[in-house]
Amino acid sequence: MKKIGFIWAIVSMFLNLSATKYAGEIFHFGAGVRNFALGNCGVSDENSFALAYWNASLLSEVQDNKFEIMHSEEYSGLLSYDAVSLIFGNDNKFSLFISRIGIDNIPLTKLTNSSAPPDSMNRPYEYKSISDYDFVAYFGFSRKLKNFHLGLSPKIAFRKLAEKTGFGFGADISSHAKITPKMVLAARLRDFFSTQIFWENGTHEIVNPSLDVEMNYNFLLPIFKFNSIFFGRLEFLAESRKTAAAFNFGIFSLDYHLGLETKIHRQVNLLFGYDIDNLTTGISVGYKNWFLNYSLELDSSELDNSHRISISCKL
Image 1: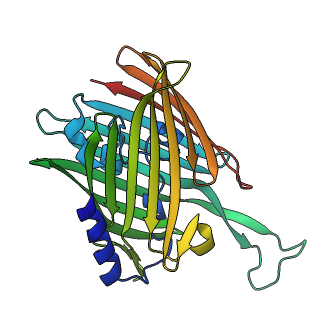
Image 2 (image 1 turned 45 degrees about the vertical axis):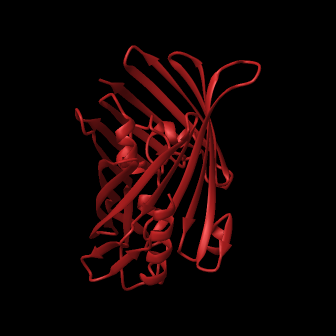
């Protein structure tokens, strides 16, 4: 853990700290219904289906092959988020996460007479509709070096915005350690060599490195005696987010996420979370090796609530 924190400090100091603000938002949407319901905690969650996204080092803790297919409606259906997560392999597990984030059917308009101002006789009309979207793919690998777990997640992105296209590439590194039989500490250094995004019009965007540190703790819920897991995640960014973050320190900022999983039945889990400013909740119901998962984020701003649903299977 100390090694990853030290690397992040050095990388952030010497790389381009004037990188494009919010250029990396397409990599910050989170992954999976389960982790969305947990307040976007997942860096220490070995039960996540999307370990290529969250923390590839946790693949060394996974026994089953599994997959998840997710659909999400964000902000009253304005934005759609679809994803597939896979974990497979025998001795050495491999994880793949592919997502599409998009806004479809965006109308483009023209005036009947483009040389005159709009009025009752010169109204705009829709001449075509377009879609803006991002395809992102993560590839997760893990290695165990003595007692040290290391994960590597190369990632690529294809972007289409206002009929312009761009291509991006980068990678995350991650690690985890079992502090006690009930406690896991994990870290992820995102975009550790600064992710690059190149647009066809010549624009070049740079995504600064960021650091996630997360712990989880297994305990027995008082009174009800349900097996439960508490998650706490700290997200450090170097983008001068200022008031857009929970805490800011000049160019650096800090956001926090909290999650709670409670197993009320062998095949039924309740999920709760706090994602920066928004409360989240969800449920996972299983039948044999199949699971139906649902999560909800109660948006505290003027935007509407977000819903995610998925089907998953352990093979």
